[in-house]
Amino acid sequence: MQPDISVKNLNKVYEGGFQALKNINLEINRGEIFALLGPNGAGKTTMISIICGITNLSSGEVRAAGYDIVKDYRKARGTIGLVPQELNTDSFETVWNAVSFSRGLFGKAPNPAHIEKVLRDLSLWDKRNNRIMTLSGGMKRRLMIAKALSHEPRILFLDEPTAGVDVELRRDMWEMVRKLREDGVTIILTTHYIEEAEEMADRIGVIRQGEIILVEDKDQLMSKLGKKELRLQLQNKLDKVPGELILEPVELSEDGYELIYTFDSQQEQAGVARLLRTLGDIGIEYRDLRTRESSLEEIFVGLVHEQAAG
Amino acid sequence: MNFYGVKAIYNFEMSRMRRTLMQSVLSPVISTCLYFIVFGSAIGSRMGNIDSIEYAAYIIPGLVMLSLLMQSISNASFGIYMPKFSGTIYEVLSAPVSYVEVVLGYVGAAATKSVILGLIILATARLFVDYSVLHPFWMLSFLVLTAVTFSMFGFIIGIWADGFEKLQIVPMMIVTPLTFLGGTFYSIDMLPEIWQTISLFNPVVYLISGFRWAFYGVSDVHVGISVGMTLLFLVACMGGIWWIFKTGYRLRT
Ligand SMILES: Nc1ncnc2c1ncn2[C@@H]1O[C@H](COP(=O)(O)OP(=O)(O)OP(=O)(O)O)[C@@H](O)[C@H]1O
Ligand SMILES: [Mg+2]
Image (tube, rainbow over all chains, first blue to last red; front, side, top):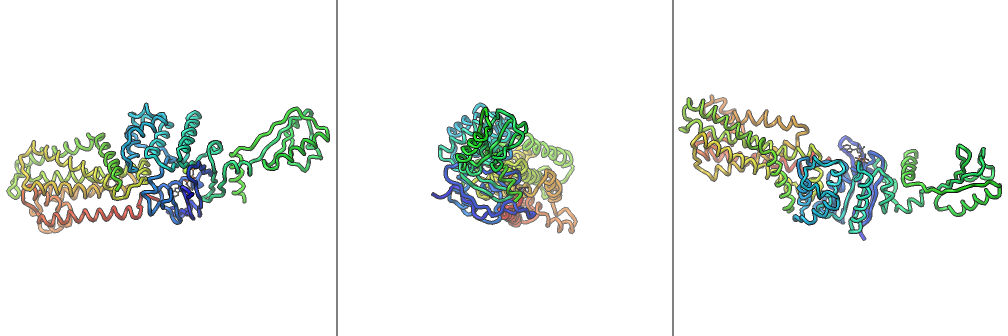
């Protein structure tokens, strides 16, 4: 199956000579949720803007739904809905008019039933006759989503959709994104809340200083790069890590009451068993034990720093 | 052709104009009335006829042109400048609309409004002066052509402007003087020879002259030249817009 978005050797040099994207290659599959992660200024918005036609590319080739975004811009853009990072709205328009405008702009015949559905799904129906300037920030964010969905796009870009959105609403949004995916919509989102990517994404791409440094299936990424931690609450205080364990990745907590063993998810069985055996052999007793997996956030921070150092 | 796209932009612009009805219709109508009262009735009554046309009637085509030019430019320049300023332009840029369609929507709406305004001013003028239109077809043609041309010009200014100041400066500093010196209040023939020659470099002279011909059958320059010049500006503005979209000038980084 051909990818829904295909980016080949994409470069972007802004006027003034700053290179925001460096030879990006990326494929996003039909119907997946792809999370694009990266620190501020990494080039996420730049890449999205190019794919959506807002910014010109410097070199390379981009296809959306199989259509070249330059030569076949009409067809390519028609398949895409965009929720931009900035909350740019026409203050004086009503919610209903703004969403209807977007649908028309994308060349679709009026369909009040669809607009109603979108507004209801985003809990904006009661506000349909309100002017946009009377909406709260979170409502404006949802309005932007409604505008993007007004023309029934097959590909949806969400550039930090949950920035400034409260916890409950964020959950609703995740729910909505999942529902869209079930309907077959391909979703590309950027976020600084890593737990969001962890919760939602099928695949994850990490971009840093204009370069894609990693693209992985989320589950694989978690198991490959994720670390696990085993914490043992000791019966008696220790002064230092026992000599028998000195070669193992074991640390002692500051108060001396906890042994912390860190291991890669992949080698878990053997390591844990060996550790517990050794402890039994040397007579160290423990009251309790807990394991904890590192979050995507920790993986992400590790990745970005490691790459920065190297 | 993305017909719905053009319609969306057009309707959006028209509804923006309806919201600003006071500013966009009432104020030009009022200022034109003031001109009629001051120049038409008060001073005009002491002026002789020009080309055997009563002075108050003589200035009508020029005054309509003045409003038409100013309004076309300001409507169209604001129309495209505001989304650039507020950032909502992203939606138009990401939509499957060609630049011809974008121009049709924005310029079409601005020109529509200018034409309507021109007609309103003409109707208002009727309250002050009894005038007739000799060539109604040409009168309307000049009205529409000028509205379209200068809406395009305004569109270009709106894209070029990167602040509100620049938006105001062209209409204030260039169009107003050119219109005042373009024969709104006098016939070019009344000027000393040297100024007559200089006037011929003023594009607005041709617009007003042609427009006045449509009313009264008298003109400073031959009406054919007026039509030709108007079309020339139209083509020049089209060229400017074509270049803007081709290069992405100030729209796409
Ligand atoms: N119009 C522009 N002209 C010049 N440089 C730009 C322009 N837009 C963005 N940049 C630069 O390109 C780089 C990437 O910016 P971009 O907005 O794509 O980052 P981002 O990954 O979306 O960051 P954030 O997480 O803060 O939204 C930044 O260094 C930015 O300063
Ligand atoms: Mg960004």
